[in-house]
View 1 (tube, rainbow, N blue to C red):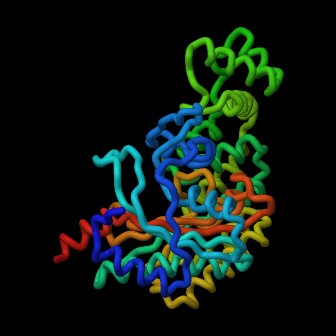
View 2: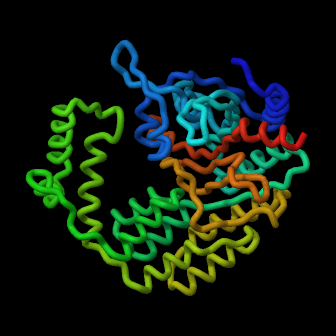
View 3: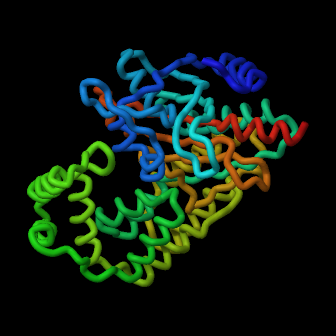
Length: 373
């Protein structure tokens, strides 16, 4: 593999070795289903699909987290174990180009989640500080767990919690969901057997009906949402139309999403919000505070780290911490990551394996280095 940025690659490889990671290489061609099922709507639209001689749907590697986790499962390696990588990923990019380089660390199996989360943020910050000396870096943190705990404490039904959780990380999707929550849409334009099956909540028969329609139209279930996923979403939407959140609960949710404070003041800000809204978030707040303390122990510049309650990352597999790091005042992240405790089980691991990791965008880093030189 030819690395386009040899100076950066050498520095990063040394840092990974110092961080006690196992360097791993994963195949460029990957099974497509895990990405179609778990990688998020934004990434699903931009991956490159192909097909093997046996008819298996494959894709060019669009990111590293899922391939590294699949490789860990197949190798039956023990945990805790830290993997590092540096290589190409392939996806359609809005700003041009379909191939670029990423490097990162995936930290699997550490049961001390506060410490592992803090280490991931610190490792990403150290990497960027190494290859971009003198640049002021700004860290933005979010927390999927806190967000979902607020939704549950507000008494939202499961369907709404799932929709809002899926929207976390996409400002347009979240705004649309909140608008529907404030003013539930009227019944859709479904008719005939689909409408009847949706009204009955008959997931099995609705899935079969959709699959038959897709087959008649010559559509492959591997190139987009699976029939079962489409059916589930249709039933969820019908259920959601019957829910209207109280004005007090809706105001509390909006108030939570408006929290944006330095990390040092975030635990107190969340406690004040919970007390004011009359919500019990004790367990989630304890975990949040433990992580904040662990991050502080790594000596990162506290004034450059913010907690934004509405911040998420558009990948479906995140379950807790999410974060991005950018140059102060910059409009594009240089590193991003988060916690994904359910991912390995969904990929086939026989027992739950907690995980957290990050990736850095080497192309963006190199552009900044050239500008600074």
